[in-house]
Length: 305
Image 1 (tube, rainbow, N blue to C red):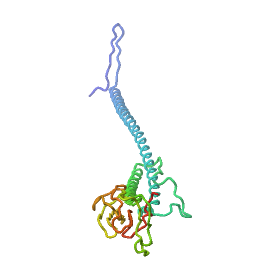
Image 2: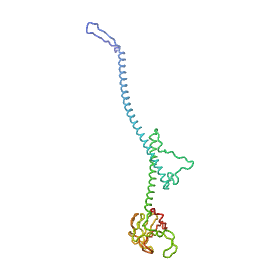
Image 3: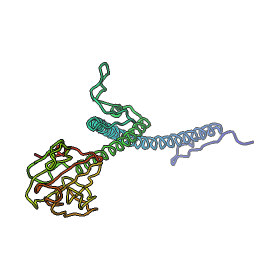
Image 4: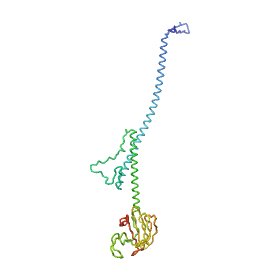
């Protein structure tokens, strides 16, 4: 049978008696198990400490990333608010321009007419859905706001393109409107009813007769295209310029014509010279403005004195 105990002998160096110690085997086993348990606990504690240290380091990194994300989120909110405010101003300016130009925008219920609110109608607040931001909005909510801002920006772009086309058309119309005198002189016969200088009959005079020295320059009163240059009965040498938008100007009794059919002319360019050709009582320019073929009073178009 295995021994149940061990004897430990201690022999001193001198004459002291030998000491004997009896150690039970069960006690050694218990001590060994205790040491193993302590070693296990120490190893577990070490592993746990290393895990806690790693988690602490990771948490520190996450906290730093969280602070960075919060800062970036705040910046995004501020930018969204700024963009929203800008779009609000652009939309109000768009409404004013459409009111001035009498343009309507069915997509956003913008129509021509008064811009003042009707009686009993609440005036909208200055801040709109694009500028009402809070600091608790989630990224998902912010993405939704960005989508709405993008859609609104697209609508604004299309609206401004409409306005640009309108003003471009108006610019072209203004450039095509005969707004200056084609020649300087004395108006001897105005637009409307008059007595014919040859027959003394009361007839309609379709333009202005501007008396001027023979050979005085005749300039184009606006941009256009020459559509006729030649003889035309009692008007002698005649020049006709098409300015677009249904507007044409006619010049009669010319001594000479300096352009030909098909030429593009600009306002102020010399196109002819005052003469006395055709049925005329003296050197003068017969000047007509016709809109869609109907004679109009040229004075309505002339802006200069």
